[in-house]
Every structure is written in C-alpha cells, then in structure tokens.
Amino acid sequence: MGTIEESGRKRKRRRDLKRAILTVIKLSALAGVVVMAPNLPMALYKMGLLPKGSSDPSVIGRTRKRLTDQGLLTWNKGFLRLTPKGVGATALLESRYSITKPKRWDGRWRVLIFDVPEYRKSLRDKIRRTVMGIGFVRLQDSVWVYPYDCEDLIVLLKADFKIGRDVLYMIVDELEGDSHLRKEFGLRKR
Image (cartoon, rainbow, N blue to C red):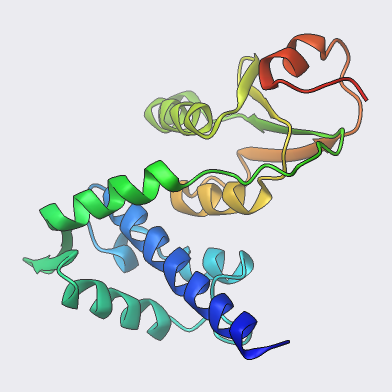
C-alpha cells in the first residue's frame, strides 16, 4: 500500500474518531465520554476506527485533548461540554454523516429488531428516532428494514445505548411482499 493511501486512512480514522466523540458527548447529555460511554473504545475498535492492538483509551484521551485545544470541547466541573463551536461542528458532521450507498444494491435486506422492556420506554423511543433518522423503514412494531450494509453503525448504536441483547441485526435474502419497500427506497427488482 502506498504512503498516500496510508496517510489518507489515518486522517479518516482521526476524522471518524472526532465525529464519534463529539456525537457521544452530545447524545449523552453533554457528560464525559468515559463516564457515560465506557464501551466506546471497544465499539470504535470493532468498527476499525482504532488501530489494531490498540483498544487503549489513551487514543480517546489524545483526541479529547485535541478537540479541547481546537475549542470544540471544554471542561466544566469535571465534565466535558460542547462549546458553541463544538455544537456547530457536530451539526456539520451529522449533516454529512450517512451510510454510504453502493452503486448496486446486493438484494439483501438489513433487518433490525429490538425488544426493549417497558420500564426503559424512553430508551425505546430514542432507538426508534435514531433508526428513523438513519433511514430505516418500519416494517412492524420494533421491526425496521434498510437495504444497505449498516452493521458498523448498529454496533456503535448498541454500545452507546448499552442495549446489546435487546437489539438483533439480521441480513435477510428474501422478504415476503417487499415491493412497497423497494418502492420506498427506489430499488429495482433484481
């Protein structure tokens, strides 16, 4: 692999780490990353955003320091907070953040099923709003469908919301009566 490819990969990893940290801080009611999302380093490692052999939180610490130096984060009473500049950067990152759609659909549906207990109703509503924001379409109550690969995003969602067993991600080859879904996503029949 050439040096340009390698440096591009490192820049992308830093950019994705920046996006993840800013989003987690925003989503966790502006509290500290380590306190509110202790599984974040492992989720980032599984997504390939942290280098192999380094699920070490010092990478998070260096990124947090860099974001503080850039004026996107600030320490306030022991908690990390987004600055107004950080809020703007987060909004910009979220507007650009989407699942890359391949040129051709592989003909497989990604199905997300969640069964969150009633006593965690607010979490269930947050999951529902998040998957709708990503672009999933509701098939039935707590069953959502998307045509493109989004496994990495679901891993991060599970880590952020701490809902490992309550959410199932499936890849389905055939789905009965999927013509309305194909129409919804603008997909042609294979």
